[in-house]
Each structure stands twice: as C-alpha cells, then as structure tokens.
Amino acid sequence: MYSHLPANGSSMRRETMAIQVTYRRTSRLSMRIVRNGDVHVSAPIGMSKKDVEKFIYEHQNWILEARKKTAEQQKQRRYFYDKLPLTTKAQKVEAAEKIMLLVEPMIERHSKTMGVRPSTVSYKPMISRWGVCNVKTHCISFSTYLLLLPDWCVEHVVVHELCHLLEPSHNVRFHALMDKYYPRWREARKETCRIAKGIFKQESKNS
Image 1: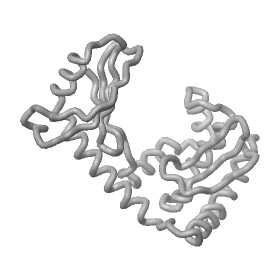
Image 2: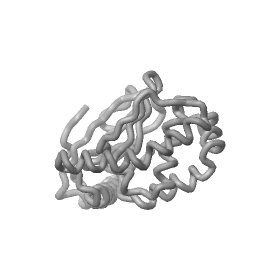
Image 3: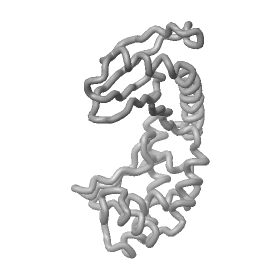
Image 4: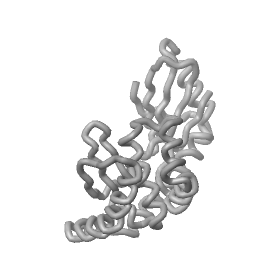
C-alpha cells in the first residue's frame, strides 16, 4: 500500500506524508524515515489498515522529529561530499588517480599477508559505500571519496574489502579476520563515522 496520508492530528496538521506500508512475516509494527522524508511502515501480514493507521497517528510527533533529523543529516551529508567536487570528468579522473596511488600499495601489502588477490580494482565516485567487493568475480571497487578520510581509515576499508575475499558475510569469522589483519578496525570505523557524521542513517521506530 502506498499513499499520501494527511495528518489529522494537531502536531502534523500542516504536513502531508508519503506512506508506504509493506506487509511482512513479522510479529510487530515498525516504521522508518527514508532519505526523501517518506515514511516506510512494516506490518504483520493480516493486520487491518485501521490498526496500521492508528500506529502511524500515535507516532506523529516521532515522525515529525525524525523527518527533521533526516533532513539535517542529508544537509550534512551533502556538505561532506561537496568538499571533494567530482562534477567534471577531469575532477573524477584526477581523484581516481590520487586514490589509486594511495590504495594500491595498501592492497599490495595486505594481499601478500592475507594470501588473496583481487582480480580487478576500480575507483568510482560512490557515495553509498566506501568500497564494494564482488565475492564471485573478486572485483573490488573503492570510492574516490576515500580521499576525504585519513590514510589509516582508508586502510581499514582496504582490509575490509580484502577480507571479503576470504569471508563474504559480516559474521564472526569476518570480524576475527579483521582483528587479525587490521586490529584497529573498530577504532577506524568509529573515526570514519565521526568524520562523515552526515552520512545518512535511517530513523526507525518499533511498536
């Protein structure tokens, strides 16, 4: 169900929400605010529309505050990425060359230690992820926006993607591999989040 749900309560009287309701095999209601400010609701299969709408209306104030917070995070996110303009082909090429010079020695060093080797490495202006590893083809892509991070945080991303060549999922074994090959990974991840604190995190609410 997807609709624009008018807010009848006082706190949302001037708001019109885009509501997407998805019925799932779940035991409780939950909702989250996505990047554009829409409200996505997950409801148990068979729950009535009336009960879903009641849940939404009971959390009107939370929705308003979460949408404000999401909008601010998006603003901070744009500010963060704007520090490295990549709007022209020349800018993209220059950034790719710079991050390649930084990352490739890290790949070479850690690949020998870990006994793995990516089939190809590419550099793209990705804003959703710092790196991506295709575990089937062993192709790894890194975001050129890594240039906005300290070298030791970049190295954490490199080791992270190389570890996926040994373990595809983020399970206990993967974390053990990170502990072995880059013991500071938790500290680096925390620092990366602090630096890029505007990067989007969905606001969610459970019943």
